[in-house]
Image 1 (spheres, rainbow, N blue to C red):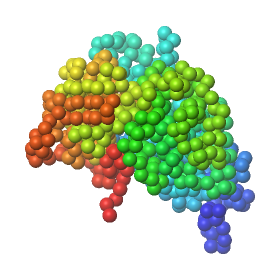
Image 2 (cartoon, helix red, strand yellow):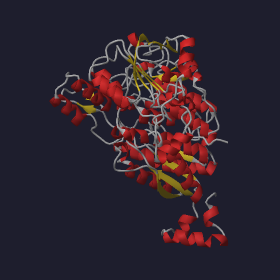
Image 3 (cartoon, one colour):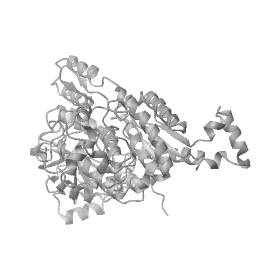
Length: 555
C-alpha cells in the first residue's frame, strides 16, 4: 500500500505515534487509508449538506474494509460572489483546490481518495487534482437543489431571480413580485437547480467515468443521495484493490464522450474552460475546434433552465445522464468501451437505462436541435476562439449584426444598461475581464440578466473576454481569445464599429478592414489591472481561456 510509506517499519515509529495521537488503532492502520476530501462549509448552499454526504462515504469505506480520513477543500458560491469584486476570486479557486488537494494527498500518502464537491469550481478543481495525483479516486457530489415554486404554482430558480432584478430595474416588475421570487427561488440546499456550471460538471463527472450513476442528478435532499455516498465509499475500495487510477479512466476517448454529452445536455459554456484544464492535468490536449466537429453529429436533447423550463430533478426522473447517453449510443457517437469507476465499461453502465420521459430528454429522432448545445466561434475578433451556448440563444439571434457598445469593465456596462442606453440591435462588448485582465475572468450574469429582464435578450448580443454563468441565456459570447489585456483584437474595438455574429457558421467578425486594424494596433497599449495577493500571482501565471485558463510556469 502507498500508505506503508507513513505507517510500516521501524523507521515509521514516530509516524505511528502521531497516528496514535489521532486515536487510530492498529486495526485501522492495517487497512488502506482513504482520503475523504470534504468541501463542506457554511457559506455555500450547495455544500451545507456535505457533512452528511461525508459521513455516509466514511461508513461506506468502513463497510468495505478501509480507513477513511477526512480532509478539507475550499469552495466559493458563485451566486454570492456575483457582480462585485468577489467574482474575481471564483475561477482562481479552481487552481487552489487542485494544488491544496495534491499537497494533502501526497504529504499523507493516501491509498485512495473520495472527492466530495458540489459547486462550480471545486468540481473541476478536484477532477484536476485526481488526474494530477493519479491514485484510485471516485467522486460523489452533494446533488442539485430542487426548483422553487412560485405562488402561481410555476417552477422558478436562481437565473429567473437574476432576470427579475432586471425587470424590476426596467420598471416591469413590482417590488412585491420581486420579493416573492427572492423567497421562492432557492428552496433547499444543493447546487442551483438548472443546467448551470455546477450541475454541468457533476453530470460530466458521470460521463468521464469518475462518478456513479446519479451523481449529477439525484437531488441533494433525497435519501437516495446518502445511499449513493455509501456506495461511493464502498466502491473506492474496489478501485484500490484493482489499482484503477483516474488516468486509466479519464482517457482521450472519455473526454470526447464528455464533450459529446455536453452538447446533448446543453451544459454551461464554463465546461469549455474546465474540460481542457482537467485534460491538461491528465496529459491530454483538447483543441476546442473539436467541439464544433462533435456538435455537427450530436443533437441537443435537453433544454433545462436557463434554456428551458425543466430542472435537474426532472432530468433525474427521466433517467438521468445514463439515459441521455443511451439515447446518444443509438447514433454511435460515444466511445462505449471506456473503463469507468464502476470497474465496468460505459456500454455496460448505460445498457438498459432507457429514456423515461421524452418531453425532458428528447429522443435522438426528435431533438431540440440537430446540433449540439455549444458552439465555438472564430474570426478577426476572436482569432483563438470564443464560445456560446447556442441552445440558449433565440433563433432570430443566431445571426446578428449590430453596432458595438464598448465597455472596459462589467460595472461600466451595468451602469449603461440600467440607464437605458442599450437599445435593440446593439452588441455590448465588455473587455478587460479575461483571465489576466480581470484578473480572474468574472462571470457576466448580471449584464445578461439585466438585458433579458428588459426584454432585449432577442435583440441584443453581448461579447466578452470574461465568461458567463451557466444561468446566462441569450446571444452571450464569452472566452474571447486572445483577451484585451494581452493585446487581443477585442481591445481594438471602437464604439459604433459593426460586429457580425454568425453562430450557425461559427463566425464572429469585426467589420473593420485589416489595414485599419493594423493601424489601431500600432497605437494600442492594453490597460493593466494592478492586482495584489493571490490575484497577482494568478495574473502572472494564468494562460488564455482557449487553453482552459490553466496556470503555467515559464521555463
